[in-house]
Length: 84
Image (cartoon, rainbow, N blue to C red; front, side):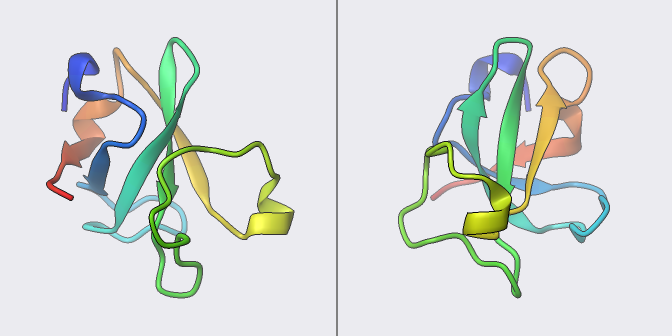
């Protein structure tokens, strides 16, 4: 994935295992913070709400959503853009 593809609402999958996120887990870029983006993961035990695309500001302790940040210049190669 490259920086021009890193847009809020874009569906992605993990190309590697991350802490608490197995390889091939799907997620959505839900926030752009300038130098990077946040991905909200759709986990079996912590699924994303239906139609989720954008961070609403509620903390994870309320929503249960696991999110990870990725630097646009050095970490997007860890993700793959997917359809829908």
